[in-house]
Image (tube, rainbow, N blue to C red; front, side):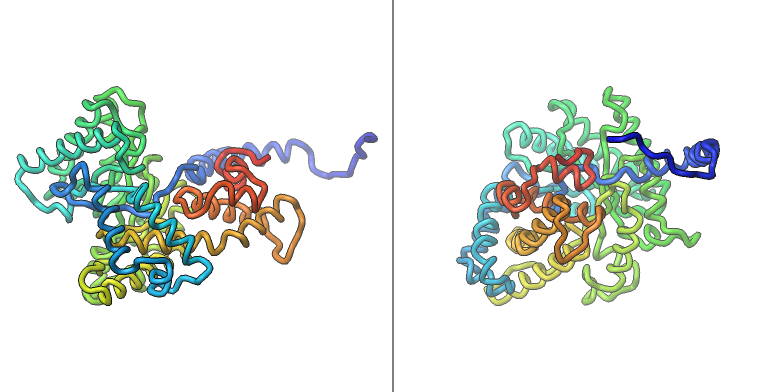
Length: 427
């Protein structure tokens, strides 16, 4: 190549250097506040089990109950597809994958509940339950029966239950340490947060535990549960949830919407409390914008309509749960709560259909983008990032296989990570 031609400019180098110096603080602040996707697997749901009900066989029991419900109420692909409105083309693969998932890994994320689902008990009873939970979780990770993610939901930081919540958390974490250390899949949930200062208190609590046990600072993260109006809009007119993410000092892993507490706090009648109510949509939209780019993920709430009773009643509950799950996925809430084993078939059916029905189009668009081959859609880097994220989530939950994605795109998992902004450069 010949010598590069000199082009005419008017600004001295000192102008550029001065602007760079002036924005250095902003650059650092952007990198700190908005690090992007953490690059880890996000579970498609969280299952909540009361602290006194959790046993070593809970996860397998949920899977077996879900399989039994499929056998009774939708024994084949056609029956399940007819109930849920899944296309004939997807019916077979979705049904097959749902059954395989329930046999292999029925629960992706399990929270042992010491809050609303557990209630107020004597101190001795809760002490024993917290210690027992730690022993069972540690054993599950040792013997390979654990869910990928497990942990507890403690009581909140409000004055009436604060000390009890702190003690339960201490007993649980201490039990894990005594049993060999904190598992990689550990997740903690802080409920009913109203002020950012309560998040700060949780950070100080975890810092103290890490120091007491010689753990690396920042080792323990936690979820923030959005269940109060004050967590969305504070008395000062600011979006409190954004302040909470900041107050977590990098420890916040996700924001979980609490359907019923939040709806009730807005005065919504019990019959209309649901994750598709307008107050829910508003809250989750604020959560979504506050969390964007921070690496903090979102989770939708639950439905309290359980698939129990005769087949017709189960089918109605399945239709509702499937529809709410599909609605959430389309709105980029990739996780939700499941409150009953009968919710597992429709959770996975909705998730698998969502990722499989868009697989070929998403793969074709991404392949065209990487190859700069053009096509009927002019995708930009941000869209390529979204397409990669879509395929990665499908891979993580088992909706699609790595070989399918590789055949359709010519890309490896590492390539997808790089395109999705997860720190690995694509080939």
